[in-house]
Amino acid sequence: YTNFIEPDVPFDEVGTPTWDGLPLDRYLSLLDMLNPMNRLWSDGRWNKLTVAHGCYWKKCSFCDVSLDYISRYEAASATVLVDRIEAIVAETGQTGFHFVDEAAPPK
Image (cartoon, rainbow, N blue to C red; front, side, top):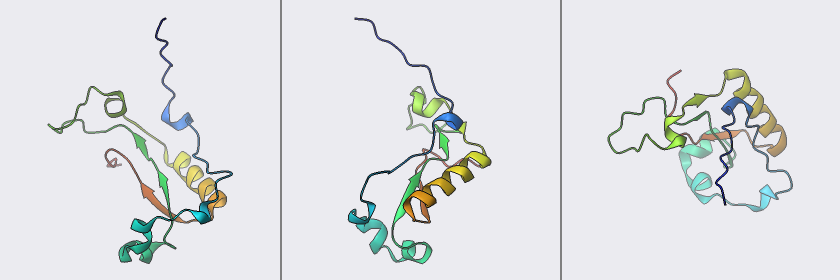
């Protein structure tokens, strides 16, 4: 047996998440729906999206920066992010987004 290492896929090329075939109207997200601040900005349902892979800073003492998902920082271009957001809104009908990055990129 030999471990096969898959090549890294550039973050801009990983594609847009899809929920095709899932009955999203049957899923509840109580945290998002019950939080009054979240209700100000959306209908209570939030799409999850990653803006960048990894961490741009890599200096926190509590963080293991040797891990690939932290050390290999790649941000998606603004064009790619807008395309992903538009595709997700078209698919889900939900306009609220929760960005789920290790660290939000400064630029």
